[in-house]
Image 1 (spheres, rainbow, N blue to C red):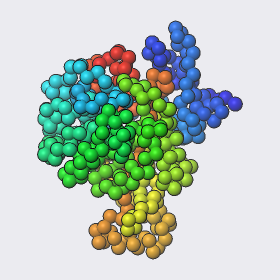
Image 2: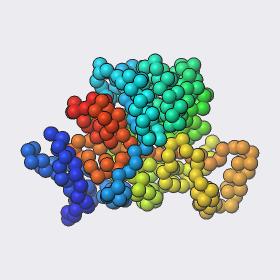
Image 3: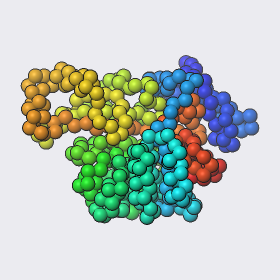
Image 4: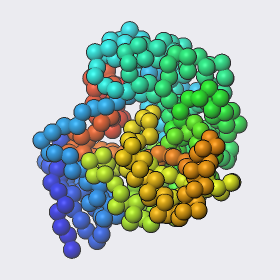
Length: 402
């Protein structure tokens, strides 16, 4: 049985013109069907799980665009790695000048500026840009492979400049896998950089490129590491490779499949996971939520899941804290609940909080224009500012330069 879930717009994957598209349900999966006047009909799998898609399909009002919250700045094209899944592999392109970037930031109303690359630590004026972002009362986030952060003095310099947090790329605990994915063995330098970030107290989003057959069996180990270092790691961010730049042609991992993986690891019912999604804050390409764990000695138990919060934000309102407390009371009974209270009085951290983000970036084959128009993230290019994933598509096809 086939049914139409919605009508939208997409782009032709050959000529990139905007065309009409339908999203349909067929055999419990979700497909996009679109037709270009010049290049014909295209059918692409959007999601393997129709229940998940229906739950996350963007319900934001059709006639209203969502305000863009954060701006991604490709600070440099230079990089000290040669990864097999690089989204911006054109290393010889000219970078934006610091004066131009300052002008963009001072004239924008974005809440957050995310500094990416290439590898942004390859520019010596990175601390200057961070200082300017803080001066303009905006949040600054750094997306980095972390190699240069193995130098403690450098990390302190970034912290003193006003850096708000770091999105830290960490793909495996196995150096052989690092060599395959990133071109060299990196485990030692990555762990040293994370130790430095912990020492200076910089919040970290632990970002993993999940490649089936290479590091997908390490999810439990990565989750445990994030919980063991919950004093500074606030988020576990999982991404699947997408056809931008240099692309690992591995089997795509859909967001619903990532949810299945974490449901098994956490022992949380999959339907409860999906049921808790806030439709206004999600889309079929991204799942975000907060996980809470009860720590008893060296053991940790997943206890509940609640909806999304923004990065670097203080945890919850009073009403939310009361709600979480009541849920804990119902789940862990009176005895465990009083242990939580006792440890809180002693200053021990018993309840651990970790934000989870699962993401697979839209590409020229499956991009849904209605979803992209409501994306809260944009990226700066030499041709203007575009929705993040759309800018990657245009750059990959040499339509614009980042």
